[in-house]
Image (cartoon, rainbow, N blue to C red; front, side, top):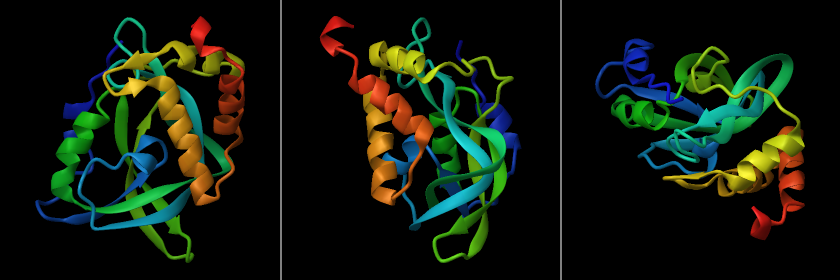
Length: 191
């Protein structure tokens, strides 16, 4: 089910026109930055793990056959690596539209590779949104991803692009790579 969060996000963490801010990306924002940015830096956040537990009814799936995309789940001992972008606040309108299917804006402290810090916005789909699919075994998630497709393309391409981008960053993410291993064993001609 589509869970449009655009209006909610417009009221969360408002910014003045022309204000510069940081955005933390951990999923498709790592490999598909379809917005103007002033600066791009690898970064990490503490207390969160990346999981393919969010439904995508508008990008990597459809309302009747959603795909699975990344969100963050609270995990006190975890560090989630991704990409931070310094953006103009005007970009938030585009990002709110892009992340409208259940994602909410949150503020989070980020750590850059040089150990400097900044606060940044992050979009997180929590378990109480209507598009939440929740946990499942990695093999089941891979089978789901193998057959899903939507306006932004095949769900498998999303997973593979994220895995490749994480490798380029030198990040080992066992959840993403585990799903990728299961996906590699699926005969796509049969799905």
